[in-house]
Amino acid sequence: MADRDAYVQSVEQDREEWTKEARVGYISLEDHFSDLEELRKENEEEKSQLRSELDEEHRLRMAAEARIKELEEAALKSEDAHKEELAKYNEVQEMADKAKANEIDMMSIVKVIQNRLFNHNSDRMRFLNSQLDIDDETVREQGFEAIIQAISQDADNELSGKNNTAGDQGQDGSEKKNEAPKVKLPAPKKKDKKDKKPRGRYTFSAEVLKSYGVDTSNLPEGAKAIVRKGKKDKWTIQLFYYSPAKVYTKVYEIGRFNVPKSDPMNSKKPQTIVENNPLMPSFCRFYFESKFAYNLSEENVIRMLESMKCHFPQSTLNKYIHQIMDYLRTRLEALMLEVIRNCNFVQNDETRILVRSRNSKEDNFKYNTEYIHAALSLEKKLVVMLYKEGSRSHEIPEEKIFRGSLIECFTADRAPLYVALEKDLEEYYLQRQACWQHARHYLVDAFVSDHRVLVLIRLINALFLIERESKARGHSAEQRYRFRLEYSASIVGKIMSLLKKIRAEKDKYGALVMRAVNYILDDEEAFKKFLHDGRIEMHNNAVESVFRHIAMGRRCWLNSGSHDAAQNIAFMYSLYESCKMNDIDFGEYVEDILTRMMNGDDDYRSMIPCYYTPGKKQEKKVA
Image (cartoon, rainbow, N blue to C red; front, side):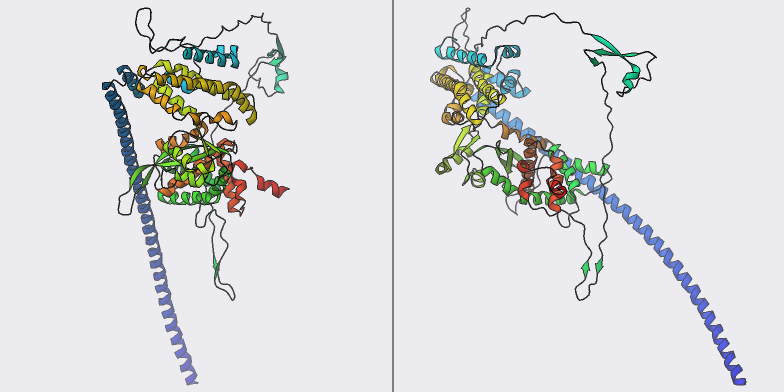
């Protein structure tokens, strides 16, 4: 019994000791948890501080990048301005040297300097816009045939010497060598004035107008609406509102799982255009529209994104965007080239772009003027722009576009690369149509110093009028060919005859006139090619116009950061300009084809702008 009491007492003592130890341990755990909570709070404060420091660092970095960009842009603008001024100085110096050698008169120099300083000339703009220097009302009254006949007659008078514009004497004995003959047309017929009929006025009650949506609450009782010629005298007012744009994100969680009898696997990832690239089709649409349709610089795009609470480091955004552009280019460019190569007639030209590059790894990066080549088909309403390390060599269009293609004739200016290209491909019987727009440019430049070339300018503008008239009449290629034979052939003959007459009397003309004369006569056969086929265009204005946005971009985003970037930019402008030719909304187009590609559609040919049908896949699913 005593042993049992002793045992119970010892157990009680042990229990009391364990209780004390447990209480002490509990208190120590509470202290430990309290310390952990304090430590967690300190960590949160440190994290918050670090986050604010990182945000401040990011802001400072963005500000530094913006400042560097501004300094680079200022340096580029300064360099471009210097080059432009140097070019003007060299031109004036060259003309001054010619003046000393009596090759050009001093008055020509003064007029050219004035034209260069003010960068425009009213006569120059009128003639380059194909105006005939004839009153518009007279043009409407006399009609197409009368105008062509009058201009042709004026040229005949010049050829026969009846106009006497080359060095004849005025009544006061002064020489009138720079005056141009005027086109004389019959006076327009006067229209008989008819008596005007009085306009009838009627009224409707305000109650009747309520059914038409007109709010008459401010009118007194008995007010009636005015009706003129059977129509209610009312109008509409449009009010415009703005809903701010926004960029939003969706967060997807990816889990890692053990799989029986297999390696661990990740849960399904959301679909993206390019792997590990978070940009979705709608975001790409926003960027591409801003960059290529509205010519915004990447810096301004980032500012727009920041206003929508979307923060993207410029280098990161640039990397993602070029991945998307490269994704599109590798799938569509070859197919677009194939379409161009299967056409019979194209227009060609090239433009320049400023690219940051270096010749070797040892050299420093610098900005160089490089070139983009373009081939356009009006038949397919498609244009392809090619960039290959900025080269202007004729080998690029020769190998990529012409060699082995179905192209019979191309329209281009007299740049050396196109002359060399034509010679290299003689075995394919490739022909070149010279551009009459460029010829007119040379004559308009000469007009600044010698107005006698106005007869030639009018004749060329008459050619453009004939082309517009043929288009307005809806002529087919065969009909346009016959129309040209009837009207254009004789005018081209008169142009060539006048040019040969001027060349024979070259001592009476200045250097600018002879430059224009030689430009056309030295390439006479190429200027006549369009007379032999109604499918050939007489100018390459269409392909010239597709470079307009690149030219505007040179003033906004200024340059491209690398050869690869320039290659992608050239391709994206191909898509943009092709969409314009086919009346396709560029933003909707980009978003649609990227969505199709992301969803596994590999019918890339149907995504080329000339074959593109909006919502094609959705229609198939509904059917």
